[in-house]
Length: 415
Image (cartoon, rainbow, N blue to C red):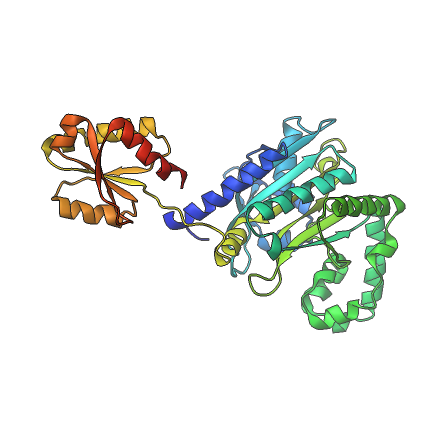
């Protein structure tokens, strides 16, 4: 688990602001769920034989002896909240959330045991147009972040739950012949979750899969039609994609559409956003049958990717540093700063504390990173003026009345 220090949070705030703007532009509303949930929620939704439930959840008994878990993902919590508050049945909901998740897994570049996710969930729409909408939203996000040329969309369909079950049996039957040649994880998954073997990173296992049954051969007609319509909508919108027949999701609740945005910009190919359709989950968690589709992306990896590609403009923490010279100026400096904040609410201004000569204060002003120093001496105080001294350019300092001052400082709030 890691801390985010002030110089890092500035980058996060830039990304979060873009996410909020893009989500709002599609009519999505924010929902906030607690980080602690009943353990049963995740066992019922994610699946007891998934890696998350078996190895990665932070689970403990509370003081009443009830098993609780720090949420490892957001979809189950979002569905629980929707069921509990009557938001889902016979309704269309477009929701988004952002916040910390927890998984006890081996830390690696851009991955932590406390990590943050941004998630989109759409309820009440069963057509391929809803699948297209969430993918288009994610594509617009990459564009807004300046990353559209760094990511690739991979697309697949798992078919209906029945089709998926038939394929699971066929895949298991095929792989049983080669059980001893599979990697250790795949051998374990063969009995519990054979579809996960499709995304094994083991080269020998991938070679064995070359001759395995194909998932698309088991699609039902409705799922095939749904997938064809989704691809047609993405083609019409100019969104390129790669059909990846081995793409499956690690959670049990997915059906039909699954997708991932992948990148090689962090070294080996890695997933930076993933999602799909989960039409049975609402009913599985006690609600009425409700179609749903969504995605989640890890914020740490996203911010790291943007920083390594130098897509985030560094933003100064302080625009102006107010320097009071003399006792009367020191007494009035904060009142002057408040007046400035009234006129320019976005101006980031720091008032010097601790007194000292002008030379000492100029050093502090420079160290703050401010663009200008604002000098408040006896003359300025008497005449309702401030002297503006540029700190990052060779421009001359000038003493300005209040009206001119506000005009001169306004551009700093827009950088």
